[in-house]
Image (tube, rainbow, N blue to C red; front, side, top):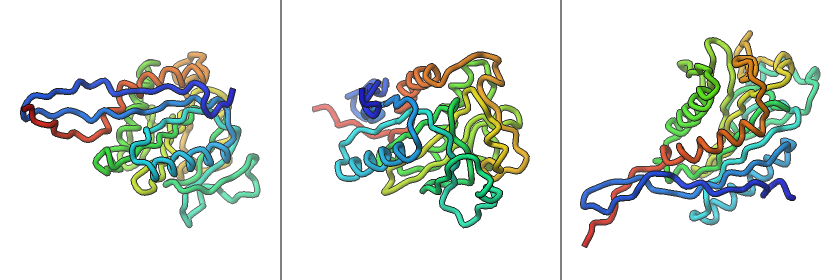
Length: 246
């Protein structure tokens, strides 16, 4: 089966609509969640760009969240400061510069990637709200493993005490998002040692497995976070007045 369409599901917001005079309700919009299994970075980037183009040409096109695992790769945002790479010749895996914010990071096996492709024109055109939504989603998700995760002032991402467990880097074109989050689930974290992750010197990178002692796979984590997305997607959408009854 083509992994680009495998495990595709439609997620609808759960908020109820009211038709009472003067009431308000959240706009309910479809969001397709796709589990792509393991996919190399270049192919995933091409797929994101294709969906963004579709949404630009058709505003009715559903939002999407791509969930996947990458082959080993390093990425960095569009920044002239590449000091977080510590040079490039020593990197043991391929490198991409992409249209997201942020400094260098690593993606690879054991890491759950989430790429929400969402039209922020339906979410108040509020990028700050969108970033906080991703953080809240991950913090709530990690609580299911009894991991007390949190934000850190001035540092986008999710942390466990002083250890970083998830990175967030987004790109926005015409208010349509791409890229997203990288959540460390299990596996080898030593590739982070070749860079200054997210430009933070001497940061300790951690994972669900290290923090909880549980054996968790990326596909299992994807199933769990898909359910949470279904519950929380409407938190993003704009509150809008309903038509008056006649």
